[in-house]
Length: 116
View (cartoon, rainbow, N blue to C red):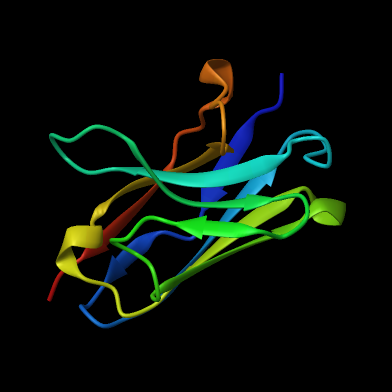
């Protein structure tokens, strides 16, 4: 079972940027779509961005225009560039299969806090 390890989170002021990384323990070449999810305090985990193996991307309305997802199959890594961050982006961010999250593959996530 592939495992994901997320990194790159931190404390950032509103309007700032972060680049999140997700390293997979195995090849992600065969995973059709990879996704970034987030879970804010008291809320359910939601999909914020996904990218197919062909590079087609999809974004939640809440992050559209501010975030860019990318994947490097050779490095088994997925990235999420986040710009113009808002306090409502505060959450723990995870990566997983973007179509059918693999329950045993969830990592610890990386915490993003947007505050002044």
